[in-house]
Amino acid sequence: MDLTYTPEEEEFRARLREWLGRVLPTLPPKPSPGDWPARRAYDLGWQRRLYDAGYAEVHWEGSPSVRLIFLEETEKAGAPYVGAGFVGLLHAGPTIAAEGTAQQRARWLPPILRGDEVWCQGFSEPDAGSDLAALRTRACRDGDDYVVSGSKIWTSHAEVADWCELLVRTDPEAPKHRGISWLAMPMDAPGITVRPLRTLAGSAEFAEVFLDEVRVPVANRVGDENDGWRVTMVTLSFERGTAFVGEVVACRRVLRELAVEARKNGRWDDPVLRRRLGRLNAEFRALWRLTQWNVSEAELTGGVPGVGGSVFKLRYSHARQELYDAAADVLGPESLDLDRPWVLDRLSSLSYTIAAGTSQIQRNIVAERILGLPKGR
Image 1: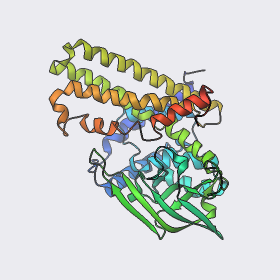
Image 2: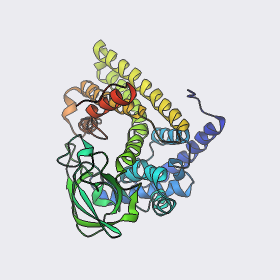
Image 3: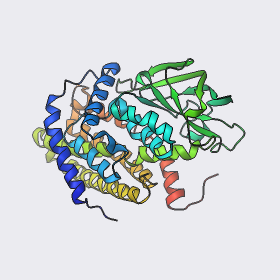
C-alpha cells in the first residue's frame, strides 16, 4: 500500500497552497453562526471562488489522493469549511457521480460545484433509531411520480436547502433492506414542512422534515427502484471514509494549541495530563495514516471508500470526544465558559458517536464485513 504522493500530486499541493495564501486574506468576515441564510451565502460564495479557480472539481474529478491533499491544505490554511454545502459536496454529489445517470450528473453536479444549490440529508427517522433500514417514510408510485409521506429528523441544513437526498420505502412487503429507494427531492415541493432543531451547543443546523404527499419525479431516483440500500452504502462510505479528513487536521491543530495553553496556565506540570496529550497525539497521527490508507484503497476500487471507513469513523468519534475532554482538563474551571475556545466543540463532540452511523452500528459493520463474524439475530 503506497502512502506517498506522486510529483504531480505534490505540484498540485504547492499550487493550491499558493492560491490559498493569496485569496484567503481577501475574504469578507464570517457571518454569525446562527444566521443560516447569511452562512449559506458565505459558504456558497467560497465554493464559487473554488469553482472559478478550478479547484471545485477535485471532489469528483480528482483522484482520492488529490481530494485528500485538497482537504488537508484548505484546513491547514484556515479556509472556510464547506458548511452549508457539505451534504452536496461530500455525500450526495459523490453518490450521484458514482451511481447517477449521465442526465442526473449533468443536472445536479455542476450546480453543487458552482455553489448554486445546497443539499440536505433526509435519512434518519424518529422511530428508526440507529437502524436506518427500519425507515418508514413511504413512496407510492403514481405514474411518473412517487407520492411521499412520512418524516425525517436530524436533517442537516434543511432550512436553507434546495434539494434533499431522501431515503424512502418503495416496497413495504420486501425485506427491510430491499424495499428502499434513493430519491433527490426538491425542497420547494408542496407538502414539505421544515422545523429547525436546536442542539446542545445552541446551533440549529438540523431540522425535522415532515412530508405530506410530496410528489417527486421517478426520474429523480438514483439507482434502481428498491436498490436504495446499496446506493446508500455508497453515500455512507463517502461520509465515513473521507468527509472527516479536514476534521482530523483540525484536531491535530487543537492538540498543539492545548499543549501551548497548558504550558501557559501551569497545567503542563501534571504528568497525567502530559501523558494524555501524548497518547492523543499518537492517536491522531495513526488516524491520519488510516485516512491515507483508506484513500489509497479507494484509488484501487474506483474511487469509492471501502469498509475501512467504518474503522476510521469508530475510532475518530471516540478520539474526538477524548480530545475535548482533555481540553476541559487544560481549561479547568474555564471549561464552563461558553466564550472560551474549545468549550462549544466539546459539546458538539458528544454527537460524534451518533452522527454518520452510531458506534454500535460501526462495530457491527467491522465485525461482519471485515472480521467475518456471524450476524446477530
